[in-house]
Image 1 (tube, rainbow, N blue to C red):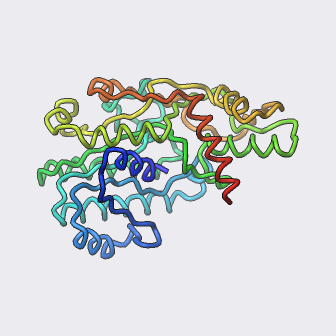
Image 2 (image 1 turned 90 degrees about the vertical axis):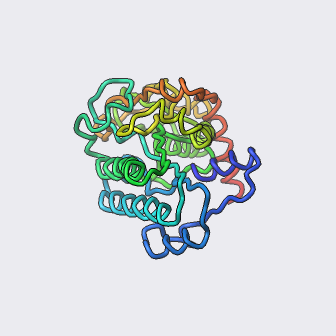
Length: 306
């Protein structure tokens, strides 16, 4: 989802030679394969958008896969990019790097100030390692490796595969199927009271390219050597109940919402402080309702194509 959006954004700007590989073509967990790829291609800039990702269920069920695969991907790509002479790299992280209970909205300085949310701790630890890899290579080798931490993403190319999907695609699919089958209600995990921030993937891609193209002096003036990552979000959040209501309206489902308080729902609130990136000149432009309408349309198009 993210990689495809970044490619669309780069193509809009006239970037002609964009090198990509599918997982089938290149397993990023295999160091020798990554080394050969980097040495052969000699890219000018590397964008590391690949990751093992999933929602709260997947994070709970496959913790070993989440920590192992993400740490291997990061270590291999970042190290082999450096070995191939790459000076510029963008690493995409996640807002789950921040402690479960911390100041809201969460500023970059909150990193490593408390305990992580247990349901996604392995994934979060891997993403923190990616940030620190970038910072460490910059300190020791003088590279310009940057990190962006997006909030919860949704949009074209999202994963709608049942229990492994994130909350927005899971709701879109569930409400659509309920509408098609004339169901009277849809179950939503949790109390509906926890709060989340959502960013359309096209906004994330625009922010990523914006950070990639910033002059080094401007970037460094807005970061710190040991806190070089940048939050990317809208600066606004909603309750899960409000999100469910919006998705229900966009999809056109007429039934009731049933909240299951026995199901896990994660951190009480996750809202990013986006002052740094806003001060550098970038702000999100796609509001949540418009973004959900776009995501649902893409979902319907994929159903037809399938």
